[in-house]
Length: 489
Image (tube, rainbow, N blue to C red):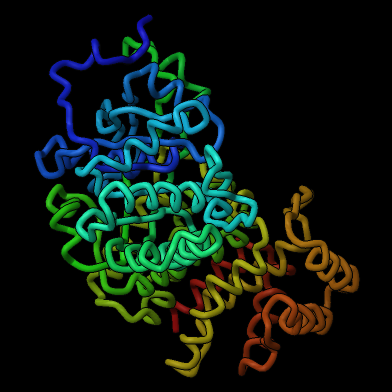
């Protein structure tokens, strides 16, 4: 069967190279390059992507062997329906192997039409390596490679301020654009590139903080033979992603004139401050994940989709989001509801098996980051505790007992956290006083919480009652009783 290449794509258009992309992995191809492809096919961007690899070279070779083409399968909920669709992405013009074609990389800096630089080099990729040198071919770090490229650009156009770039990193770290810029300037100083170059970095280039959101599982190894027969060609770079996507870019609105993703119907926003959007994602998406995991798993469920479709557990999760998380967030209600609905659709995705145990890694610290702020803000707002979040916290303490019925739970957390729960649960005697001792010790574990949660009015007593009910009645009856009692009230 023929490998995917230009011969199989009728009337493929050739676009000017406007984008340099550091990273050839699944996420960028299933997110950024797809968006550019969508815009190109609507005549709204008219530009292609040149890809360089942050490390290795295997995928660059595969990419060039397929003329930059690959198939993207999008699977998930779309307008409340389960949809699976695929398309051939044509936005990548070529890949440059930095180890064998470094001169081509530097030559690209002289292209006057090049305007954007995107990256996804993992969270560890935006890092400073003092051993990097300008003369290296290439530098070890991504910021080192980028600085060398920017310096080549600066010299090629003699410091012309119209020839700078819009640089948007997609790495999952806060203030990613600002951090990247700081490291580039650090290299400029280390390599003695001069004050005028540093001024050009500041004045001619825009480093944007960004927030990205799409699950891209990648190459479907378990189904690739079946998919290959369906497609009628071989694709070594086929990638699978969910339907949902969100890209929030912090920058000036004029960016949308050059990157008009919103005009192509894409969920890409250019905003003055992405902080509220990060908060929404952490509190609603990640917060719901963390809060639902111990409740759902101890109820007897194994996946996120099972939990959200379950009559009782699904009701608990929805009430948690709409009644307790959303009221604490400071954004227009319409935006919050829309985001919450999208989250629930993502949870329902029948094409992805998202196992609850995979979410349970380091659950205590996740609860602290994702759910505790909601709990505290809810109390400060209403002067009462959010009972579903309180129940989730009790369920989390029960989860760390390490048992689901007769089944052992493979707990994954820092050893000191595991030791804490091991000691506390070894002293459990079945009485409510022994439950209160466990709760008091866990809530007072300041190494995780950075505060003594026993000082939150009523929290120790509320968690104690919920945990006692879970331990004596079982999760099913405890949860059903909780929802029934509150509904009656």
